[in-house]
Length: 574
Ligand code: HC1
Ligand code: SF4
Image (cartoon, rainbow, N blue to C red; front, side, top):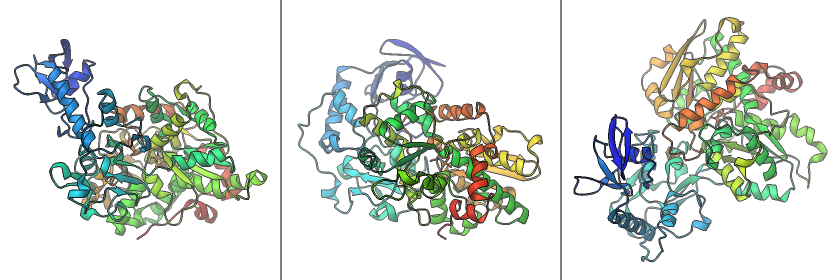
């Protein structure tokens, strides 16, 4: 351990910790703009400079390692003056349009301007558009991601998140130098024409509103406020946990009931659970897997519920699409059932104003789910897809005291019941574990196989594997970069019978639409809560879901039947 003082307070930090870690340990606030846990720091914003006794110049605390005996000051007059000038310089290059900005109220730069009580008195410096008009500042071509580079503060986090330190997609890179420097796409192509997979990791790390999810929450509120259509919403497994962070609760707090109550207050007529459809996905996918296994065809099977992974395969390896399960994702299954299944028919007389179908919304921890909802073949089953962050904006916009709401809200049924297997979909490894739990029942080995597959869990390892007795070895790729590495060699073809890929590290709980938490252990905390919900569930295998059993008995016949195929399976663009 290293012992040092920060503003006169003694602190101890682990070997290898930075001075910024030490200030956090001491409970001393030091502003940062270009720092994000899990990504390398390049100390470009200079906000975190601190004085270190014995050093002639202030040191960037995010990249300077703490040493035993260091004496740190964070609040000298010169540091405060420097930070203020630094922020004024950024403000001079920033549009003054916070009132219209999607991240109004949650922007790190806006907070600084406010904290420092800065005035917009410097002459505005035009962004690269004048010096380099070839770089277009705004891009709304992607169904998932919006870009507005006039707001960019050049922190470089999006470049890291999309590049070598994160997703390894390299869609965004820096162009130009000096005040014209900005993160642009290759050849300045619109995002929709690049290899962007819509994962949204760039929006997760952007400290301002330069990269955001394509916003749909305004439309949702307007539609609900008019009360002219019967409305239904489904909520993803990961959202019910991460939403708590947006309202100052401890990371890992489960807010399922509060969230349901908030959605009813916002105006949804029906609040359903995506987990119901996750159980249904398992019924279809486990059956599909066992059929392929029997025929020894198109193995290993690739899971298909992560839309950014599907995008990646379609863009980069269309030759492997035969491995991809044809089972729709839970979001799309739920959308199809709500829009066109028995629920929609049951509404009958409730339809209003000549609308012949309910208004259907989903709330996901993911930006690529927006893109998925408009894919050919599934488009139309969801009217709007929101991220967890957008859900928080809606709740705040309506002034709902989220953290004070009771935890007693319940999902509507049918389309609301689920098992623990549906819940663990939100974690990397969870889909495979859920498949194994149900497949073991289908092949009559349920009693001899464990329910918990700890080898498949966790956020740290990039590839996790397990041997399933009598079936073979399965693998989890924890992040798209891990999948890319695995597919570079041919070994996977013979080694595994099934491979789960989630494009974001940690799975959906680390999705690009989740809250922008700065807690370095955030993924672990969210994941722990997902498995706690599973552990406490009365049923933990998807086939035990009573409403799923009824659905097959009344509507779908059996898994992979023609009826199930018509509603619950899809195809891919080779
Ligand atoms: Fe996911 Fe899924 S688990 S993809 O991560 O299969 O987004 O949470 O909703 O569809 O269920 C996301 C999460 C989510 C789907 C399910
Ligand atoms: Fe890169 Fe993902 Fe952002 Fe696309 S959405 S630019 S792939 S980080």
